[in-house]
Image 1 (cartoon, rainbow, N blue to C red):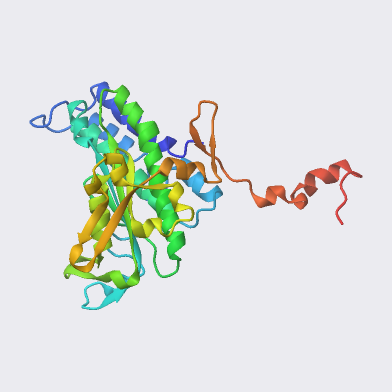
Image 2 (spheres, rainbow, N blue to C red):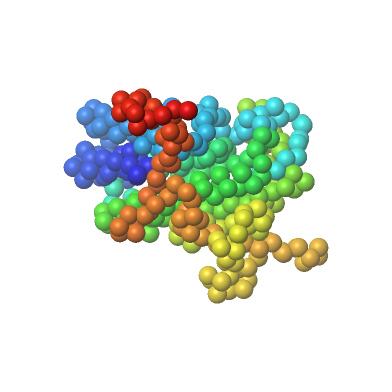
Length: 338
């Protein structure tokens, strides 16, 4: 099941429209779009609703039992800490911080019009947001074509929140690496990938508060581990995820999925993302093997070509013999309900 098929089709529509000459080439001085071009742009841009998941991802989310999606989020206003907005109050609470950035997106301007680039990147942002939402994430900020996302809150355990975050990042990484990257490469666009960083901060290390002035403000966290998530994103390989030691410590059988970054780079200086020699504090960063992690999930299978597929779990109702009663009763005496 291709859970991103609707998003992928929008990207291909944008490329086809661009190649057919609907959007003017060049980065400046091209004038306004024609009415027919504006209509095409709007049609493609709105194929993925602003108010709900695309059908393919929605179906997967519902049947896989990933929980109710909260579409009514406000950027910079985590619902568990929104009461801090425009106040001097602060609060300590754990959080998982994630930074996801599309790397190499400027290369698309070499091949496509700015309208096509907008449609492609906006669709990727929507797919990233929707993936976070179905896994219980909260989108804190959109930075160009990158996202800053929180996972966790007051009514979820740290362990569950970390697992949800890693599932979200892994699922989206799979889409970009195995579907989008190959397609754009076939269109002559190279070096498109994403890089993600994730870290976990305990309550004692995370201070929530309202940052800014009046309406120009957001409820955010002041934490070493929020800052490190951003830094670790820049340490990631193409379509890679780099995680802090605190994340690794919350994942069962973590040695199966995490390896120190210095093992990949061959530079021992890359082992630690943060050093404080005066206090003897050295914080390790790890490459997260998201491909291996996904393969261990119960809703993942592989086709004959070894390509990963997301399988819808079998409902318990289907396994319950009583659910067969309406059919089996037609074949009495073979059905006996005792």
